Length: 60
Image (tube, rainbow, N blue to C red; front, side, top):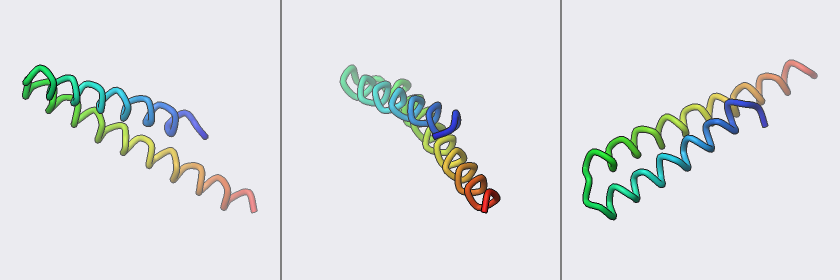
């Protein structure tokens, strides 16, 4: 795992928590911010996976 994969996973988890908090307290702002953070984390995690794949292909 590289830094992007780890940071993305953490950001995704934080976004899920914030989104669920927003649902619990009926705060559309927190739901939206949490969903955005979750999506950003998924994207960053995907970048990390792509970097790992490229690195493994170039080592061969």
